Image (cartoon, rainbow over all chains, first blue to last red; front, side, top):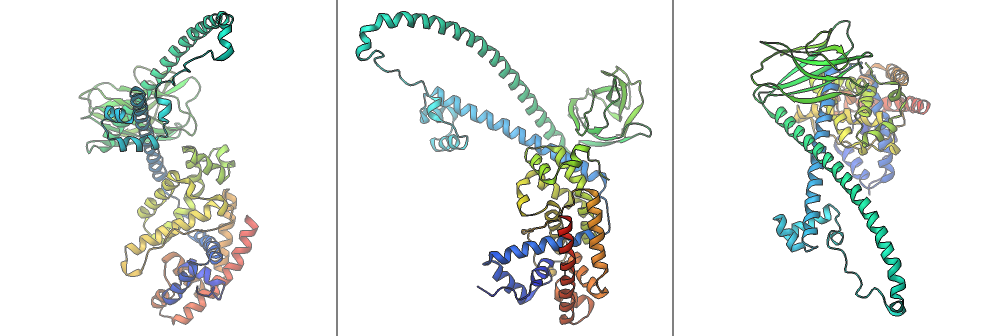
Length: 314
Length: 191
């Protein structure tokens, strides 16, 4: 191992990027083998980084934050879609193993994959093949030894217990029905989310999609929004942040077509610090001229009556 | 301009990072409001290209969103870590545009104890760093600015300024010694 740097400021000079040639090579060669010096270099990097604060202040444009948060929302939707797909795959494997009574060969055939791939997936999703198979066989003789002599004494309370168990099972059956209904609702919600995510991916991937920035109007609540629309696909997506509506009021998004009356595209009541976003279908043949968000009585109106808070021209 | 709400203003960097791990978008927005101006400034100073600076700024925060555990609070403060990354990315971008300038910097480990979670603490430290630089002799300050903001080595600075290499080395060594003394004391007082 090379010797430690002879001068303490070598760490700062290296962090600054000033060392070059043999000095740099010798420093790096030593650093690769010396944890103590690696620690000193990390400290020097943190110290030298403070020079950043000497740069003249330049605030980023508000569009950077808007793009960042839109990127974050897109990533979150993609992640949700991936989770839904993972859950669906996990359930399908679990179901196949159950139907195949735990036989990997049969389950793999049902799923149309080979045995090795199924084993990998079972490991990936941390499935317990034993728990997906049929219930274990009960013991062959439930009354061993001296209990045989007391069958009657046992059977009477057993029948009573059976009656109670039946009542409990009936109650459980009703609970399961309720749980099944809730699961169906959840599944329907997940399908809707998946459809939204697919439509969103189609919308952002299409070259015909137009993005319109909606700007705040003087004297109105502060906010900003984007509308993404595609007349060929007949889809529209709103994404924006705006100050909460005053009491007993709601915001309403309008599509103002080149020809015809304004079309209601959503009523919303924002929550501080949270963006509103939704997708909707546009009526066929509508060619937007502009988009506007107006302040309306709570619940919205069939046509715009209140002041325009955000406006964007298509 | 900061748009952090009262709750976000009071939250520590570590608490906000923890919320980002839990996929809380408001926490990322709060950290952006807290440090985007500082990072934008250094990116613009190095790159002198507002569009490139904004691209890197957005990318740094998106990477923080995707992989918040990359930052280890046990190893130092978030702004110090962000500044090292911003400077490395900007210098790296500069060098890609000038292939003769040498290899690309890596995002290596950095330890910083500075705490500038409030705008007031940030302003105070900015004043002290600027003061420390202004107190250096002009030629030392110029050399250190060429190294930090232009990503130049000893030899490149000598070539740019026409000064002998030995003189440049001495200037930079004296400059970092002075800055180390001053900034070390300041870091201790703000941590």
